[in-house]
Image (tube, rainbow, N blue to C red; front, side, top):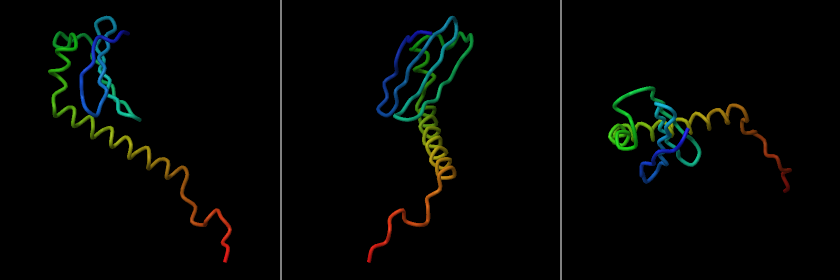
Length: 93
């Protein structure tokens, strides 16, 4: 797999990969990533066609999904490691 291009975005790192006749597009923020993988598709052949595919609606949906992933991760952490109701420190009067 090799990088064939990047798409500029203020909040995301968007990388276009190619392996054989397959295209993958990875969207990343600081903590999470979402990847779309395409098989042999004549319409998506390189960075220019991926830019047309990654329209403003898709980009907003990707950002929403990354926010949802963050919420899911935080909720799972809260379930796995619930906050203790008692203070860890001794109360000094």
